[in-house]
View 1 (cartoon, rainbow, N blue to C red):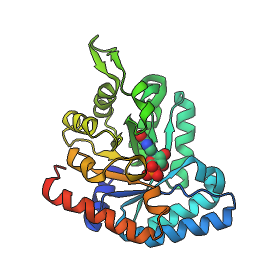
View 2 (cartoon, rainbow, N blue to C red):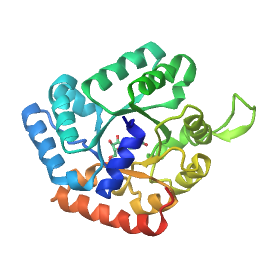
View 3 (tube, rainbow, N blue to C red):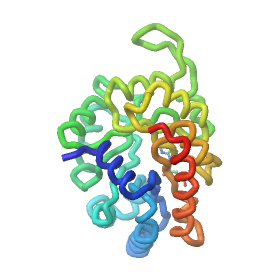
View 4 (cartoon, rainbow, N blue to C red):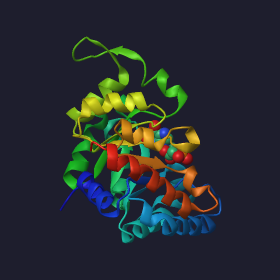
Length: 260
Ligand code: XMP
């Protein structure tokens, strides 16, 4: 059975899209929110390869309630599912949290490498490898303030060399065999630098397009394999049309310039 990294690649190739929908629709009425989420998913399913869910939706709908329904719905549409937990705790807690998400049906989750390997993320990598799930690592976040952490120059604890923090995270993504490295589309130069470290062995996921100012075509040209997009789709007058035109815009670049 193919695991997450191969499965999402297959879905993306067969449907001709590398868009991951960030389904961050806000709302406090769980019934109405669930209906709207399903409606948007239905509308845009042909133009996306995966759906990413964030914590507000889990808080609003509950994991075993509405979120599980969305996961089933997405899987029935042939889509992969990612939990954007940005997991960042000690090992046994990380393991418990990851088990909850994987048991609920998520195919992958996002974790924060700041917490480190020993007594940090080691437990969820072993769980994911055992259960064929995916772990995506934050390598350089998309917002301005990310430069304060991911962009700082630090001394590599392994080599004593001074390096940008995100370079160390990209190298850890390789060493830990992560299933994806997340680099903001708002930072195409960093996407390019990470691509040069990963050299196609680990796919790059880029959030931060349109609403945060990143250009999806530029990110793909720089080396992003998947584009994560939320508000530009679900807040638009026609999520279907927006997803369609984003997919077309990216496909033009992908055909001529993609190096995946
Ligand atoms: P928008 O509406 O800006 O939504 O297209 C972006 C989505 O992606 C998440 N996000 C990130 N997730 N690393 C992540 O793992 C990042 O650097 C990052 N930047 C944005 C955001 O939470 C939302 O779901």
